[in-house]
Amino acid sequence: MKITSVEPFILHAPINVPSISDSTHTITHWGIVGVKIGTDDGLFGYGYTGTHAHLESDRLVTSCIAKSYGPMLMGEDARDGDRLWLKLARFPAVQWVGRAGVTHIALAAIDIALWDLRGKAAGLPLWKLLGGATTELLEAYNTDIGWLSIPKDRLVDGSKRAIEHDGFRRLKIKVGHADPMIDIDRFEAVRKAVGPSVTIAIDANGKWDLPTCQRFCARAEPLDVFWFEEPMWYDDVGSHAALARSTSIPVALGEQLYTADAFNTFIGAGAVQYVQPDVTRVAGITEYIQVAHNAHSHRLPVVAHVGDMGQVHVHLSYWHPATSMLEYIPWIKDCFVEPIKVEDGHYVRPQMPGAGCTLTDQAVAAFGQSC
Figure (tube, rainbow, N blue to C red):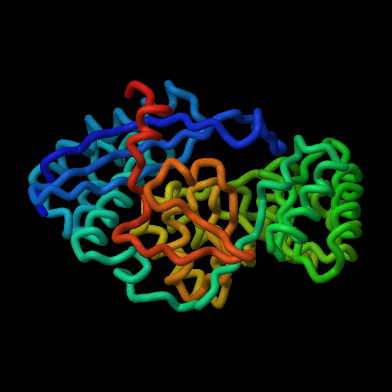
């Protein structure tokens, strides 16, 4: 499986509504930024990261792929996964300018593409290539009904519809208003509408400080919050540990952590109870596995952050024994040959060989951008 081509790509796909907002971001499109790697046996592997569809930022990623990593991949054997990951991750010139951020997510896209190639060469879906599914059913929790920009009445209606008509039993809603009592009121309305048997998590996207989170949690604890995701600034280990000690609501985080070492620090400090690695933020499937195994060794559940990167995460979640559920955001699923699919609140197990990242020609033609 000699690598003969490394072709970066950028797609900007519109989301399924005009725009959405959480406590820190407003977006209208989702960026699918990555690489198509070809081999001498005619196979192509696809890997990508997710962005907020800012073209100049996305071009930093594709430039890193094409100019920094690409030349190091040419002529290599795509089956040498661990060796190639180390070759790129520890390349001194790139490591010097960034061990996270642009260089790391560029490596993520490449690593995913290489795993995709190996699955296709073996004729196996990724979850099977890794060793087989460890769960019969992977439950989906719906985030797409819970954006901060959705007015309370529509939030309640959407939550009821997700439960009563779409089969979900788990929801997540965004919080992060300047006045946290607004979020308490919204949560109470959803809880009343869907009843006590539905699990509801919340996500602040790093908006609040420790005192605000503690006051919020004191009011929210009687409402049965499943977890509190990214309550504070992403790198603040001490505040997350302090919050975890002061509330019965479990702390969840991980989408803004780029390395296995960062996860080690949070886990070691007792600052996280639900570990949420993102295969496109850590350096691909290879580093995701390191994080998931470490969490599992500490008897912590792993629930991947999706941010609409579920194409790969559904494979990893069916396979890894620490995982029993996965976020559902369906914005870009139809850009792929085998889109993620949820039936009766559970993910359908993928069947096609590879990691599920092969783009359709229609998506490339409709949403492709110049690199």
